[in-house]
Length: 148
Image: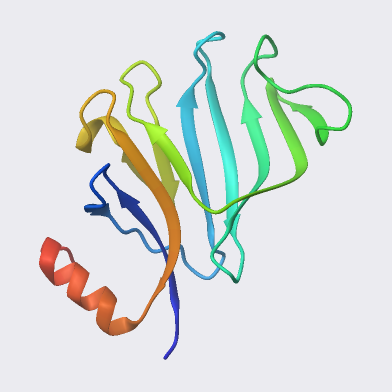
């Protein structure tokens, strides 16, 4: 049994909607439009060996209300007009989001973009958690979704 790290993206009823492979790096990002600043933000996560999600960095296009900048929140860098807050170590068992058109939430996994608004109705609850799958479980899912 060789565990393959994936994200399980489910609706409010626990129905699996997406199951993207994380790769050996076990990384993904959550992109959204900030509600006050109206600029894009990215939250970068890694998945630990126990399946927990760890927020390791954030990126955003402007400073302002609701965006972290205080000492003790990590190390803030400005690189070509983008702000990077690194050195974070915030642990989450899973993420719960609401699909909101104005927020434009998307998961970025291995170069692929999964837009919540494409598969969830406005206001729908979305649960994101990591899981390890066997090759047989993965094949079963792929066949059920008729994916390549």
